[in-house]
Length: 153
Image (cartoon, rainbow, N blue to C red; front, side, top):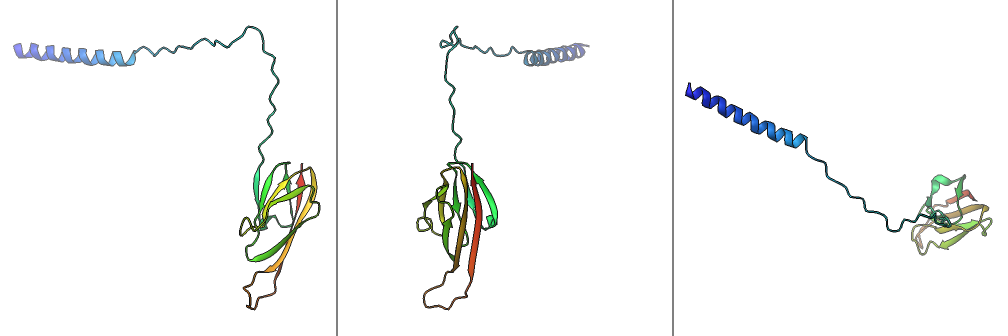
C-alpha cells in the first residue's frame, strides 16, 4: 500500500509541475510598447508647400523588334539603340529637336548609341546599312533597314 501512495504522490507532483508550466506559457503578459510623445508636434497647423517630384526618367532598349512600330516616351526618357551588330548602321532622325543622340556607337561598341527625348513631339528614327566586311574579303551585298516612330509626351 505504501508503494501505491508514493506512486500517486509522484503522479500528482508531475501533473502539478506540467500544469504550472503550461499555464505560465499560455498566460504570459504581453510586452509593453512605449510610444514617445512627438516633441515636434504643434497645435497649430503648419503651412507647407507640397513637393512636386518629377518622375524618374525611364531607360529603354530599342532593338529590331521595334521595326515599323511606334514608341511613346516622356521628356527625359532615354533609350539605347541596339540593332544587329554585323551591320554598319547609319542613323538619322526626321526631327532632331525631339530626340537627340547622347553617345554614339563608338562609345558603346556593338550598339548604335544612346538617345534622349528632349521635347514633346514626334519624329521618325531611320537606320540603314550594309553588312560589315573584313577588308580585302568578298562580302554578300545585303542592305538592312530599320524605322520606328517616336512620340514624346
